[in-house]
Amino acid sequence: MNPLHHVARWAVNQKLGRLRWEAPGRLADGVRPSRSFLYIHVPFCESICPFCMFNAHKLDRRSSQVQDYFEALKRELLMYEAAGFDFGAAYVGGGTPALVHEELARFLEFVRGRFDLTEVSVEANPRIPDAAVQSLAAAGVDRLSVGVQSFDDGMLERLGRLEAYGSGAEIRERVNRLLGRFRIVNVDFIFNLPNHDPEVLARDLQIAVDDGIDQLTTYPLMEAQQNRGYVDRQGRISYDLEAYLYKRVILPTLREHYTPVSSWCFSRKDKPEVDMLDEYVVDYFDYVGIGTGSMSLHDGRVSVNAYTLPLYQRLVAQGRLPVVLESAPLARRDYMLYYLMMALFGRRVDCKKFEAIFGVPLRRALWPECTALRAMGLVYARGDHIYTNERGMYVFLMILREFFTHVNRFRSLAREASHRLERQPAAPKLSFEPVLD
Ligand SMILES: C[S@@+](CC[C@H](N)C(=O)[O-])C[C@H]1O[C@@H](n2cnc3c(N)ncnc32)[C@H](O)[C@@H]1O
Ligand code: SF4
Image 1: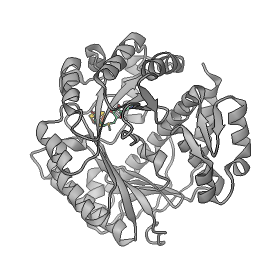
Image 2 (image 1 turned 90 degrees about the vertical axis):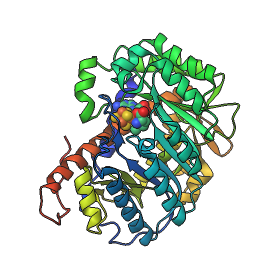
Image 3 (image 1 turned 135 degrees about the horizontal axis):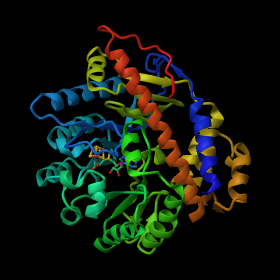
Image 4 (image 1 turned 135 degrees about the vertical axis):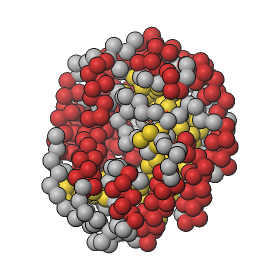
């Protein structure tokens, strides 16, 4: 196994494991208003996939669940507006936000009435109906991201999606009908299931290349508390296989027609307008997440919202920000390291921008890290930029895989805290000592 895998896991766990959690109180302390990125979580899905690591609930159309949820989202957004936040772009993730497109389109209109959004991205499953495509396009959605995972029926069966979302051939046909309806259509694939057949992955990617899909995101399977049983039943995750699939299948299959815009996101070379990235955390230094289980990084603090629908709605109805976990501010050097990590995951770091943000040249502030990255042959410099090469891309894929896996532990913490707080009377006191598993 690549020894850097152990280094990446150790370093990420060291840094994130040392985050100190405090009683939430950020807005009460006053914020530094800034133009941030807005993440909107919509947790509803038609059915729950066994491998999923996100906060998702089965949609129940018989209740007022969806209307109540969007009302709560509005109230939460207004709290941020009142505190002086300004939002420049939004990512609606889930769950499957496109599933509740009517409420979502109305909500986006509400957001646009308050903030000048330059970009909006929305997640969908492959069974998105035409009415949803129309209403989301009319609502000015720029990028639709569709969870395909695979075009192979055997893989879809293993992923628990064949019955829910149809065969690979049906999914392919539906994705093709979406092309051209949005500025960017992104397709998500998942790779490195235990014993993932390289030929199946190669065929999946070749279909996407042949069909000219604007953007492809290839996620390595990541573990979380909620998918542990599923992963165990599938076998053991092999990081040797992950490296093989990435370096010998993904990169060579996509190299001719796609440009990597991050370690796991690839945009078509012949479509220069396909510049939106899948990971907003790369492009935006500060972001605010609204909705159940959403995370924010603002002013150097990480925070996580109430995970369960009842607690989230109860806190918002009480006029309280639904944050259940908030970290102490990151040390300045850790903030710089976070910036460097995200920028290099996104293929390049702009040294001038780094200096403008932190007031110190990158090579001076983080010289040991910069020297090590060069000595290991992972990056190269061109003018004011430092870029990852293909070896570096895989190393930053490993780092981000470990980063998101650790972030999944924050989600578990927020879920446990939310269950505990839900049992408390009307106005839960948000101070407790979270314990990492
Ligand atoms: C929130 S889903 C949105 C798409 C939509 N809900 C769907 O699944 O069709 C975003 C993507 O996350 C990826 N994903 C979910 N669980 C994952 C896991 N455990 N490891 C890696 N990627 C995962 C899937 O590729 C999925 O398409
Ligand atoms: S992968 Fe997508 S559809 Fe499946 S449970 Fe997760 S969010 Fe829902």
